[in-house]
Length: 279
Ligand code: SAM
Image (cartoon, rainbow, N blue to C red):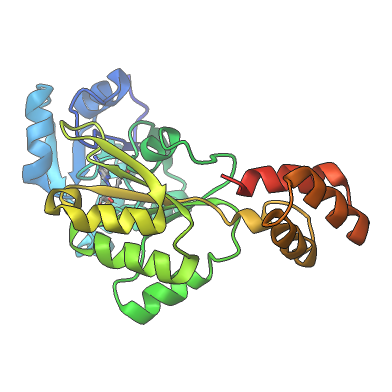
């Protein structure tokens, strides 16, 4: 039984149609109308689950008018579900304007949690997940893309990008140029689909892999970049620089001990840091 006049933000599959919750199916069956990005695309999902609810389109180009009409429907007591072509609405998808307006108008908004490519990619990537930045799509233009990446140079968190197959090589090239060829990169491609692939390597190696075979550039991509390890601790940058120099000549234990004595730091902190970069 649904609450009257509620907007449900419903996550739908990102590939495998089985990736949908029982609750999502019930809500999609029970609401009065479903606002979808592309009604023809979403009709296939509804047919698969025998859902006969009326669809109406809401996308980037009509959201500012459409949200007013949907709010009127909600205020009159109708229940509305918002879905996108895949995954969680509003995550690099339309819906922000509608949800924001509903909140302003005191309309109840209920999330129906489910698939999201960024989270699916991250949880199977092997990269640190304690802190991550979801960036969505980088700007397309060269300068803007480089400037956006520059803001991430000193970030110790894992960064998650969405990218289209047409731009994946260009974006990896920019990552190598701005963040460095040695950064750890994981590409999650075609998640939950037949050719699901996780490829983990340095940024430089990833670029070589992408260029080696046109098939590697096909499909849907999440690009994840490991954080800057040099800022994952409170060690002064001069101490890190000395430690790195010493590590090139001495065993880590000795390098850490000398650097610690020189900068009056904890030997173990330097030792642990040395281990983390000595891969
Ligand atoms: N709202 C969606 C979500 O929750 O993930 C994202 C929509 S955004 C317009 C589409 C982008 O998500 C794609 O270009 C790709 O970067 C990523 N994506 C969606 N499905 C994917 C999949 N099955 N495998 C890998 N990436 C996917």
